[in-house]
Image (cartoon, rainbow, N blue to C red):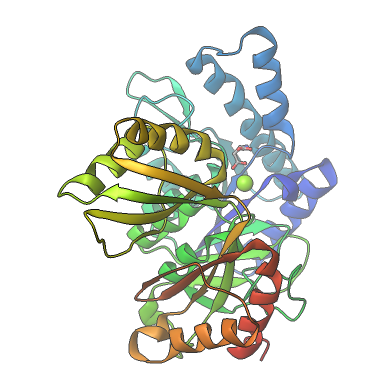
Length: 403
Ligand code: ASP
Ligand code: MG
C-alpha cells in the first residue's frame, strides 16, 4: 500500500518524539508499504514565529510571514529524514515546492490549486520515504505560501489525493473520533468508521483532531482518512465514503457547540425582501449565521431568531441596530448562555422517529428547546447552556452510544 502519514505538532514536539515517528515510519516500511510523511512544525513553533514577526509590526508583510512560518515545517521534515537515514532507511525531505504543491497567491491563507506528484513518485519508486513539509506550497511567481493555521492536514490530504494513496493517516495525540466529548460523557466510545458528512457535522468533536477543510477535501478527492494517536498502537477512526460503511448506525455521535449566541428580533416589518435585507447586511459584515427561525407574522410584523458565533455578536448587533433606527425592526434581545446540541447519523435518512426521540429526551429532562433545525443526517437543538452536559449525556444514553 501507499500510505500518507501526517504527524501533527505534538507528535513531533521534541527530538525524542521525532525519533518515535521515525520508528513508526520504519515499521510501516518494513511491513512492505510505501510511505510519504507530511509533517507539522514542532508544537509551539509556529506561534513562536508569529510572535517574532509581530515584534516588528502589527501587520507584518504577508509574503515574509510565509517565508518565516514555512521554516517551522522544514525543520521537522529535515530532522525526520535525518533520523530515518540514521536508521538506514532511505529518506528525503522536501519543501512544498519540490512536492509540486502549487497554490494561489493569497499569502498566509493560500489555497492549493494543483499538485504535480511526479518528483514524489520517482523517489518512492526508488525506495525512498518521502518527507514533505506540510502547511506550504508555492505560488505561480515561485514565492512560498502557507495554507492557513492547521494547514498541514490539508497538505496531507491533498498529497494523498494527488498520489492516489490507499490511506491517509493523521496522527495526533487523540485516539480518534468519539461518540461524544469524553470529558462530558466518560462512556463515550471511539468510532471505528464514520462517513465524511457525519464527520463534517460532528466538527466540534473532531475540532482538535482534524481541520474541517481537510475533511471536505478528503471527501472531494475520495481520500480514506484515518485519525489516530502517535502515542499508542490503538486503531483510529476511519473517515470514508458512506458506501464503505456497511452497518449505518442510526446515530453516530452527539456534538455540542457552546460558541453560539442567539439574537431575537421582534416586530420585524413583514414585507417581501426583509429577510434578504437583514441577512444580506449581516453577511456583508462577515457575520456567519447558523440557525434561523421566523414565526408566522400578524399585524404586518413578524419575529425572527437566529444564532451567530459569540465573537461576531458585536457586529451582528450593530447591523440589527441599523434596522431599528430605520424602524424596520421594533426591538431585539440576545442570549449568550445558550448551546447547540446535535445528534448526527447517516442512518437517520431511512428511519423515522429519530428526531421525536431527541425531543422526548429533552422533555423527560425538563429541558426547554429554544430552536430546532434538521437536515438529512442531523437534528440540532438550541437549549440553555446550563443543560448542555445533561442533554449530551441523556442523548448519548437514549441512543445507546455507549454500546
Ligand atoms: N504549523 C502550522 C500551524 O501551527 C500548521 C499545522 O500545524 O498544521 O498552524
Ligand atoms: Mg494541526
